[in-house]
Length: 67
Image 1 (cartoon, rainbow, N blue to C red):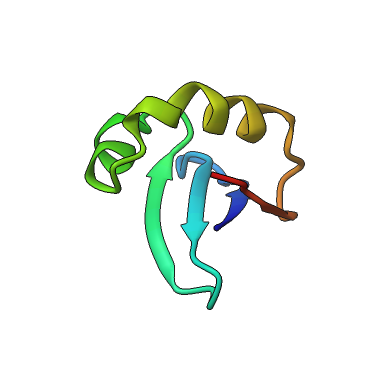
Image 2 (image 1 turned 90 degrees about the vertical axis):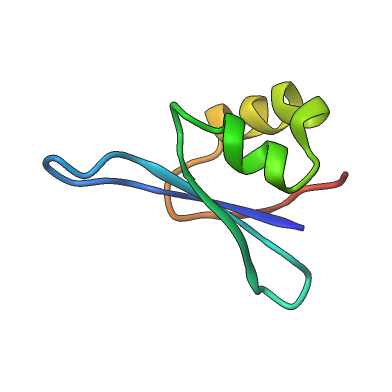
């Protein structure tokens, strides 16, 4: 699974994309509201780990998420 942090502009907030190994979009959520999206993917128990990666990830870069 891959993670991408997208910088928002003006009134558009920052977003996060979670993508599978074929780079298909699995989830797209606001940085400050990950709860429902991660729950739908069955990753609610990994939320702290994912959010820690998001915090350290520069905008526009892709990182491999080992889950």
